Image (cartoon, one colour):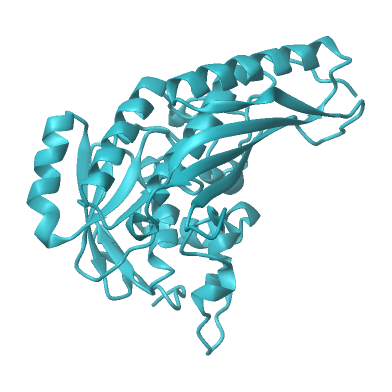
Amino acid sequence: MSENVQPEKEFSIDMIPEPEPEKIEEIIFSLMVNPNLSSINYFNDFGEQSISPDSIGDSDTDETGLFDLDNNGTKMAMSTHAFHHHLESDPQKATEILISRATRKMLCFGATPTAVSAFLYHINFADPNGHLIASGAKKGLENAAKKFNLKISDRKIRFDHFSQHGPVPPTIIVSMMGQVADEKKLTTHSFKQKGNHIFLIGRTPDDINSSEYLEFFHGISDSPLPVFDIEDEINIQTALKKLNADGLIESASPVGKGGLFFTLLRAAIPNNLGFDITTDAETRLDASLFGEAMGRIIVGVTSDNEEEFVDAMAEFKLPFFTLGHVTKGEVRVDDESFGYIDKMTAGV
């Protein structure tokens, strides 16, 4: 079977009724069984014995590996990311989104992204459509690498040839490498202490395109790519570097799979903390909590640094939003409690 470039099907968020607040808990627990959100699937163990965060892997690095390169303390960070949405219809934009995600995540970890390599999987390059996908992905790789000042491996795009890939869509996989100047200054995604303020940097549009929420909960796989502007990514990532260098943030996490809510869960799990947030009243509730629009970062800020952080954000002229604060363990959204981080059960 060869690839067939398909015209993008029309989709509007208005096709999905906005859920009532009392429906949010059902959505959360439905998404928790999603294999793509498996890092927090242990919430579905409702036994008496609580589960250690260690059981979900190296949670403090959030999928970013740290390596010693020599005996002199030189370290490198590395992460791997994959994306299959719209490689057939818009391979350049899809590739730019993937590299932007990888770069943002590396910066949130506290490392400086330096190099990237890409691999196209399930591509039939004997078919003209395979060539179109490869050509678009190459353009996306080169443009994103230039924007983010990344070096590219010599072959740029590597292929895994399949003449018949069946139901498996073409997928692009990138490996990102970064430098670690000072391990003591690594930020990581995890919340550090109760009482820290939680801010969201970036805008939250009414967008649920290509989200786990739309695909897994509503069963709609045909939707456009999420909202994305590579220039916004550059501005936000530049600000993140400065905030990190000035020591104004204690944690940083890109809004990723599962949207804001599941990004907050991933930040809360490692230190057994919770969060109390208020969503933006001007944005749909499902888009606020589960949308996966690009260009957004969650940061944790101490009370001592809050004023300086706000002043710095004003200088950057970037949109940011006060979400709430880190709790001792309870998870609350818009004054509704969903239980505690170590044992979230329906009805608690």
